[in-house]
Image (tube, rainbow, N blue to C red; front, side, top):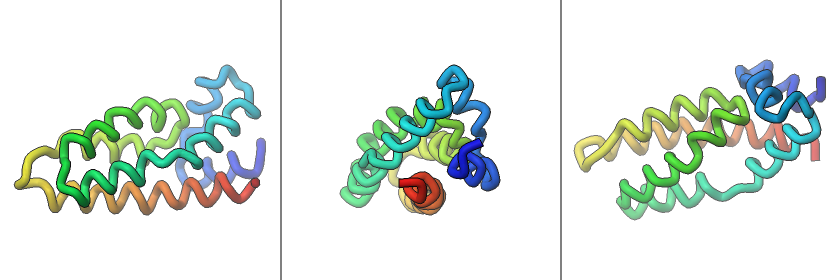
Length: 117
């Protein structure tokens, strides 16, 4: 198994899920991970949060849900699901906390993915 995939698996990524979605093609899976690492969705989601646009923030979460699942990034998938459950001004602070956790884990994954480049 590729070193990047081994490291991702070691920190809890569901690499088998990602490979299954890519029909067992490791190169295809790695390309998908690299596209993910280059995407700016999380930046845009955080920008929407900072501007207090909860609906736009949640729209980005809906867009990313399938990608997180298909890539086997379970921690991001479940944190993202928590974001989708939060709504309204009363939960704004909690939304920020979950988004912060999502960013932390995202950075961890992206650093591993980019280590191969």
